[in-house]
Image (cartoon, rainbow, N blue to C red; front, top):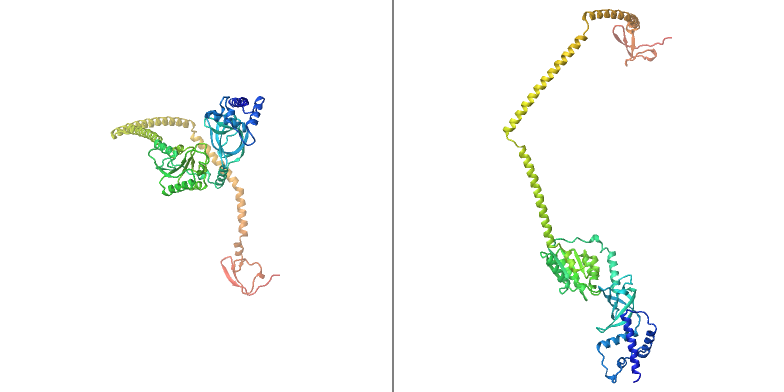
Length: 505
């Protein structure tokens, strides 16, 4: 029994050192006395595979150590110390699930594999050293220490760092299906249809017990109470949920009683939302003739249905808001249109009144119009008379001036007559002289022409001989016996026939 106080001192010293390190955030390797204490602690209380715990070693010295009773807090603290001592730092491989980033900056999540899961925490100081934020479904290797959360007695991993070890099976399946459907063009924005802004009815495909349904109904009742909401119930989680969702969607399509369909559910882990990553459901959403709005999970959650739907909403409430125009907004728009219409109508009436006033100003009685026209005629007559007299006066003055100028310019008639007679005599004399030589040449030419006139020659007994074609015959060799010829004489003509032809030597 004399060794018992020594072991209690050793344990309390080690426990206090570990508590001080945790309180100060110290996660490095122990040094100095702390290393010696931990080594002595492991060699004393731990073997290679079994942890030996004896309450009497953890209690303060007492006369009757076999009767020591531990409180729950003491028990959890001692178990935590044992876990931290046996698992100083370890590497764990697993898939992240239920990831939460607290407002303080700490990360809380679950590490799982095919057979088990464990809770984990990564404090803000450690999380800020990473260049990325992990997501649910991704697989990592975690460097962590095993700790016990004393208030609940739950053990957890306190993660110091992590590195990628490949993505989880669900996430990999999600990416494969996403790539497949994207290659088929189901995510193409060109095939997405516009959402009706004023639907008469909206359909909701979700579970009757889902909080998302209450959010949608509350939002629709508040924003658009005039729009009818039809619910097509189907489970949104669990085995067979995807097939039920496809069936509910097909029911809505067959009934064709809504203008827009909402496919909604609340947030959750990747496993909780996995029904909305089903290929059959995605193809049903893409083939739906009714526009579909997907509002699955929170803003950071993405499913295959979000990509194939005609519109993706971050939350179910947002899906309800995007499905139709708010009643108050519609009323405001109608009010604005009425105000605009009233203004336009007022402008039209004002322009019409102005045109009427101008027309009334131009409209006068027939008597007034005749009187005005009579005054205009009198004025025109007066102006015409004045213009005529003015022109006559001007013309008279001009005529007098021209007469004066003409009188001054007229020569003496007797003198001009004498000059004209002398010029005529000179012209006759010059003409006679100039015509004398041409007249002589003309007489000579007339005599020459008369001498060369064929008719004169024919008058002396000659004749012109022509063949039947009217051509002159110049050579007797051109004639044949029996040819008929025409003789053109000085007086008349005669037809003859050739009886004989002879050639002149």
